[in-house]
Image (cartoon, rainbow, N blue to C red; front, side, top):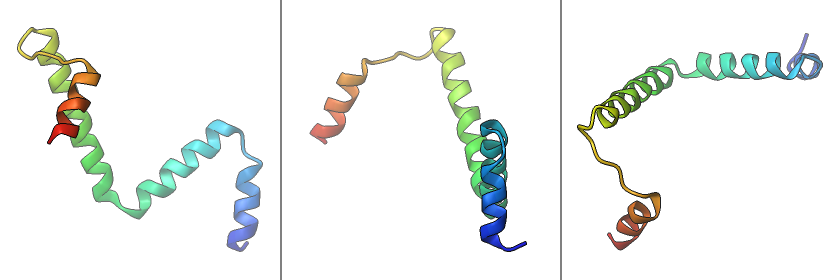
Length: 71
């Protein structure tokens, strides 16, 4: 089976299966990216936990974007 045939077969899969296949293919191309994604997710969870414990403050998105544009 060539690449085009494989692609056409994949198009016949249910949407959830196509999404899972796409994710697996992308992950197989650059495993370090997956590790970075995992680290970013852990950091996001750490920050959310800190916010919920009252250790971190939040700012409205508009305020954040205005500060970024000013710099």
